[in-house]
Every structure is written in C-alpha cells, then in structure tokens.
Amino acid sequence: MLASWLGALVGIGLLGWLTQASGYPLVAAPMGATSVLLFGLPNSPLAQPRNVILGNGLGALIAVLCVLLLGANPWSMGFAVGVTIALTQLLRCVHPPAGAVALLGVIVKAKWAYILLPVLSGSILLCVITALYSRWAPDRHHRRYPVHWL
Image (cartoon, rainbow, N blue to C red):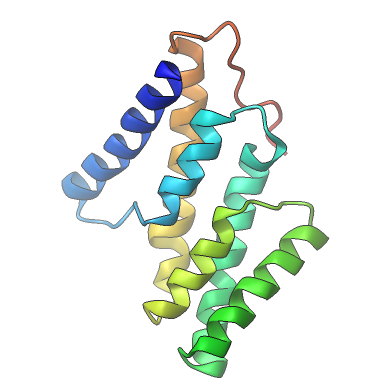
C-alpha cells in the first residue's frame, strides 16, 4: 500500500511539476484513475503501456471527433464513452480511464491539441515514470512494470 501511495504521489507530482515548468498541460483528471492502475495494480493487463497509451489516445480522438461531428451534449458524451469502450475492446487495449478521457474531452469541447496535450504526452510520461519507479520502489521485488510493452 505504501509503495502504491508513494508511486502515485511521485507520478502525478512529477506530471504536475512538468506542467508548471514547461507551461504545457500534461495532467488531466483521468490521469488520477490511470495512476490507480499503474501504481496500485501494475501487473494488471489494463495497466500495461499499450492499454494506457492506446486506450487513452483513442478516448481523446473519439472525444474530439464527437465534439466536431455531434457537438458537446449528453448524447455525444454517451456516444464518446460507448465508442471508446467498443474500440478499445476491438483493438485489445481496454483501459478504464479511457472512458473518462472521452467523457472529459466532450465536456470541455476538446480540440485536436487535447489528443497530444495532455492525453498522449501525459500517458506516455506516466508509463515511463511507472517503469522507472518500479525499479526503485520499496517493494520492487514484487512489482514489475511493465509486464510487456505491446
């Protein structure tokens, strides 16, 4: 538990610090849920880099397309989350926070930049931070991340 808590503190803390230092948004609310999987259940198939990066990236892409084609309304929100679930199942990259990425994207009326900043950049950085953290974590002998990259 302590190692998971510390990992989330380090991961989200670094993303927040990088956001402040660079001026680029690298953190969004769904990254908190991603951190639960990365640091709390690092061996889960749902926490592997393919799932995190591709799942969140698809959620962001779908959100932007929904906003452009359907507008930002309750049905568009539901459509974005539903399509994200279906596509991530089809592509074998289910990552539950991807649904939150899609929902948030419609809520904030995301533009194309949302896909790269904060979603893909934040997801990639969190996976790298988690991989590095797992090498030095207090429970590193029981924590292996990633189990696989693809």
